Image (cartoon, rainbow, N blue to C red; front, side, top):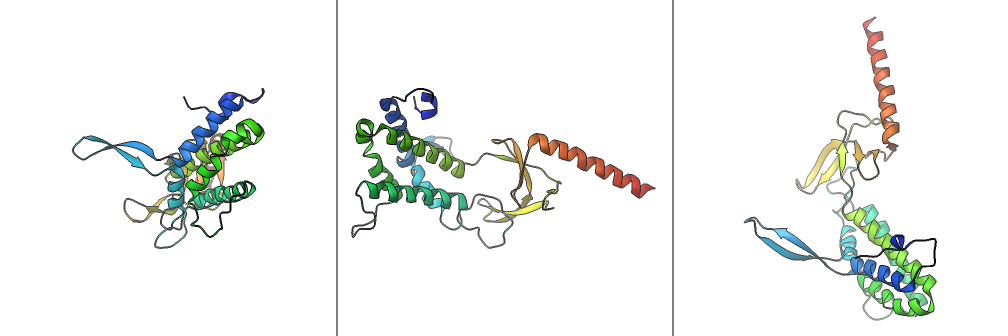
Length: 234
């Protein structure tokens, strides 16, 4: 069973042992390769290892790995801004934390990759468990937040496109989105439903509406359209 701090409760004092379990589980998800089952063309199943979550995030910062839909022109999209921001946050946190522990990331030796830095930081968990449980709670929450944010970047929730609708804010009906399958820019509807947040988002201007707000807005627009048609017929 994977423990998280949310499952341990916040009203009572958190047990350092349980907090350590939650921290270790999050660190494993960040730094350990994952095993996946791959179905071959002949139907056979094969186990394969994938890079750890942090390595995947670092790879996502390379040009050509943008996952969001934007209308910006170009032959290939830039690196994922979400991945860049998250990797920068974790890198800054490691620089600060490891410096406080007497570790110099900018010394003469070869610099450890980000996953290695996190493992070095996590190696002090036993010390925090006994000497500084408050910091262990903080570290566990940060690690769990990085896991959740990383998975959201690498595996974003599906969106259902709303074809034929113009964004009420920017007026766009479509945007250009890079397709990894076609290896080129393709045009898709600008408006889509984010199934995780249950809202409508415009990929062109990033405006969001709750589902209820969008429904009411649609009713108003349809009423205005009927009024316009009635005036044209007079």
